[in-house]
Length: 86
Image (tube, rainbow, N blue to C red; front, side):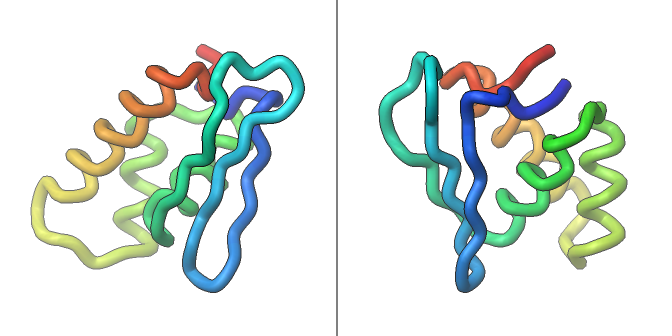
C-alpha cells in the first residue's frame, strides 16, 4: 500500500496535516500527531502494515499492542477517505 498521490502531507510543530489535492474524492483535512506523521511518511513509499508497525516500534516506546492498534486504525481511516493506493 502507498499514500495516494492526490493527498499532500505537511508536518509542522509536531502536528501532521493531510490535505486532499487534485481529484481526491475527499474534501477536508486530516490532522494528527507525530505517530500519524510517521505512518504517513512511511506511506510515501510502497509498504506493508507489518513494515509500518516495525518502523513505529523502532521510533516510539509504547505498551504492548498499542502501535498495532494505532496502525490498524490509521489504515482503516485512510482507506475510508480514499487516501491509500493498494
